[in-house]
Amino acid sequence: MRLKRTSTCGELGKKDIRKEVCLAGWIQSSRDHGGIIFIDLRDRYGLTQAVFDPKHDRKTHKEAESLRREDVISVKGKVRARGKGLENPNLKTGEIEVLADELEILSRAETPPLEVEDRVDAGEELRLKYRFLDLRRPKMQNHLLIRHKAAQAAREYLNKNNFLEIETPMLVRATPEGARDYIVPSRVNPGKFYALPQSPQLYKQILMVSGCDRYYQLARCLRDEDLRADRQPEHTQIDLEMSFVAQEDVLEMVEGLYKHMMKSVLGIDIKHKFPRLSHKESMDKYGTDKPDLRFGLELIDVTDIVNSSDFEVFKKAEQVKCINPEKDFSRNELDSYISFCQQNGAKGMAWMKVTDKGLESNIVKFFNNNLQKKILEKTKAKKGSTLMFIADKPKIAAAILDKLRLKLRDDLKLVKGNDFRFCWIVDFPLFEWDEENGKWEASHHIFTAPKKEHIHLLEKEPGNVYADLYDLVLNGIELGSGSIRETNPETQQKVMKVIGIKKEDAIKKFGFLMEAFKYGTPPHGGIGLGFDRIVALMCGYNDIREVIAFPKNKNAECPMDGSPSEVDETQLKELHIKSDLVKKK
Image (cartoon, rainbow, N blue to C red; front, side, top):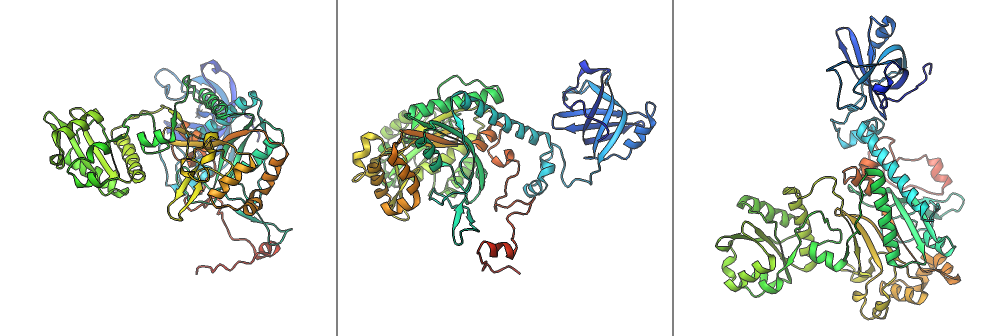
């Protein structure tokens, strides 16, 4: 490179007028106005306009005539004011331009298969195939910058609070953690396999036994599971663990972490304490353990009222809940919401409008005046409201009403941008009943501590055992889950017995951790926080692929590098693997 860069394309202003500079970057656009060529030069810092005037320098003007979009060049020249009425107020460098004295063409570019600009979004596969072009766009560069700042802010906060950043292994023993493991064959140990870590869970607990009382890591986690917008085969966690703590200590530390990140990255100062909802309260009010608190529309249980009506559907229902969006919908709109609920598992959706005359709908005739009065009192519904009812088993009704609530949020535009509402969900049941297999399963993992006052219920009433387990939620998105860990061998065995894990199986799967617990274990707890998720939300997205440099598509493939790919038979032989997969013709 003959010309050495002295400035970036995002820093020059009026203060630099008459200064000789050298810029380098990609050509965003080129325009010829009356024989003078204007080029917008772009790097990750911004845009600067360079001017090639034949009256000033005929040689550089001639060279500039051949330039095309995405060519890489360096330009040397003097900064000058654009002139009155020619400024671009939307550009940081919009008051100045660089009059070119010298030009060096560093790399020629073919016509790009997608537009390298923010106003045009190509299709997903094209963006992933040409990710190196997609990432050149200013908004994608900004996503990477926000991710970088968020990581630095997290490290800054945790370092100040005496945490040690410690790396845990990427090749580990396969252990059941709720998803499929990615398996890696061992060449030097024929027939044996490593797993890629779904999380550093067991190792961070080992670190607590090792005396590292405050650990954190921006950990890579790999899970072989079906993909969606907030799920990738590999993602990053802010993983942390603390010794000699109770639940409140972990929650306060994590609150401080997120307040620091929001302030450092977005300039948002969150002063209030994050609200805490029990799992039961969250399910009762919102139908989910991931509530969006940016708007109201809480669910209202009217089962005890409507069970006394003559409406057979409500009389026989295990639970009837309603939602009051405080809007008078047309019949077509109501039919649309009925279809939506049915598509999400409901048998139907009943409704009642509140008018001057009271409640009106095709089912009001089944409710006497006293019941109608009780419904109005319970729902606090006013004239112009439309009550929407779902009748079903509690779990099904909750799931449907949760989706309906979120649809109403979007349809009625109930939230505004740049509104961040964190909350903690606490007091989870330790076990979940698996209807399909007819057995209890751990809600989190088997080393979650039951509440001390519930330990005596483990053998006879496992469904009534609650845990020191907590989730952090932001705007309806779960950011992370954690718990205080159970280290008492006797209690651990009772928990394993409930979910059907025999002691010998537990030793086989978790033996190294259980062995460590024999030699003096401090009480400890922690959390794994979805780093990609918080960065996506900071950038205004739910899709974490927007903030991951090189994500996979919905088939867990990378169109850019062609992974996963076939490997040479020689490699398979070295790994003692024989493929019997029938190739497609």
